[in-house]
Amino acid sequence: MSKSFKEMTKEELKQYMHNHQDDETGELAFMEYSSRLDWKKVPANATPEQEKQIIEEIIAQRTQK
Image (tube, rainbow, N blue to C red; front, side, top):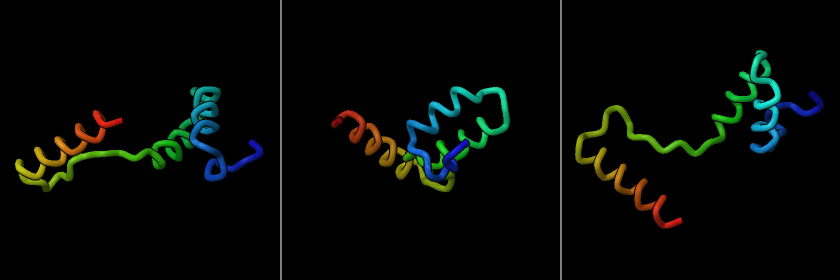
């Protein structure tokens, strides 16, 4: 591996994960890749009203693209 995972682009990490599915370095690449994703999730302590609002905002953002 010539580049560290932090230096790789998301596409390079994705390809590396694909090529190294069965070894530990593939898992490490996945951990770096997943840390860069823009995860949208509802906090565990959100009220039902907050949860509904957050979900509706996520849906609105996705349907605008």
